[in-house]
Length: 366
Image (spheres, rainbow, N blue to C red):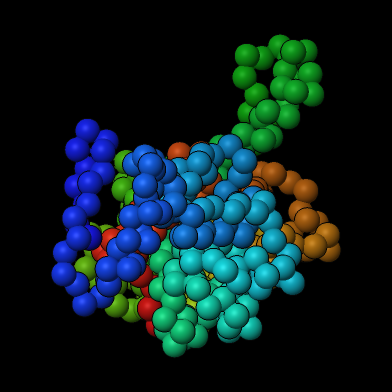
């Protein structure tokens, strides 16, 4: 059949075909008789099942309705591990952020053709099995560059300007009873002319470098892979970065080269006045060693948005540091302004549309 739509009226002509016989054409014609264009679209969408396993990870304040234009969508706020298999069994597309999808979870999902991860990292997906099973895996890229760079400076500037201390001073009532218009209870510094060291000079690292330069910082970087040597900033080895940087921010992926990169030995080499900001991956920093380094004044402080285990438990050594001028922590939110989270869903929709039209994008391979 060939179809034309004029003034919202669909007409069809039967053409010779080796694929579609006349009986099938007649059945299809009967199915479409009396149906409007929107009815036909709804019928087609009902045969394309999309399951979102953990919408909670993107929050309740974003628009998920745009997914409904792409198929029959089932959205779960969260999914327990033992519920995954049953929930994805008849799905054509699965959307997830954190759930692990390996052979055991996927082997009975015989209709599954596409997994959309609402993040850049896909270490929670068994790519080898997906390749064998003919399942395409797509992620989202570049959606959070501005947001993570912004959060990097939110953490650093809070520490550097001692904002928590000065807020508490006013909140305590001491400012109201003071004879002075100002209070200089905690020494703080200008960023100008300080050396900002960057670990991981990808999109986010370059954005941070540009902002640090606008503050008149001297920027240098360490390439964890050793291959990133075409930047407009000074490249140094790791020891030099540790010994000469006033601020170090981490924007690298977690791999064999970066796991436990910042440990007791690393902190000993850093300036006692230096600050560490980690918005990359938690396991890049040894949290026990970091807590000791802060307590022993090996470094001045740290700002963390990522942790070795998320969420961590109540005996995490970082919780023993009760001084916000030395340690600021946020619960993995650097990526999460509302504009960024809506951008994630827009990217997922484009990934699904690309799959449906055979114009794949953001495909993840081994």
